[in-house]
Image 1 (tube, helix red, strand yellow):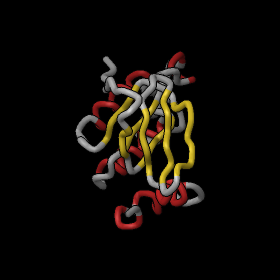
Image 2 (cartoon, rainbow, N blue to C red):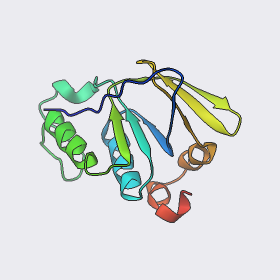
Image 3 (spheres, rainbow, N blue to C red):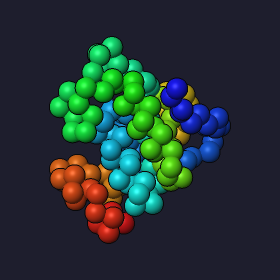
Image 4 (cartoon, helix red, strand yellow):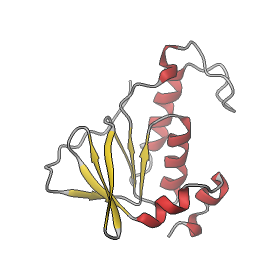
Length: 138
């Protein structure tokens, strides 16, 4: 059974995260895992509408060949639950807007938060190894 953390927040309170991961596919969940291991405060937002959920098996994902997509997702969420700095919400990100020194995001369920711009700049265009380097994400 999928365990998704659901928080009820007012629109006045802004959650603060080091990284906002939009989408809970293999890439987003892997990034959240590495960042969680580095003690970064991460929010994964995913509506739960993965395109491959109707498939019988995953192919081309090392260590997961032949596994059902729903089993993969259940195991990934279980692994992420070990890291207190990683939160998963069953919603989509509706907007991301520059706001001074940060970016503000708004989710479809009304939750709002901020993330620092330095992470956004560093994540785009870098290799996975660079993202995973704990010391390079300050």
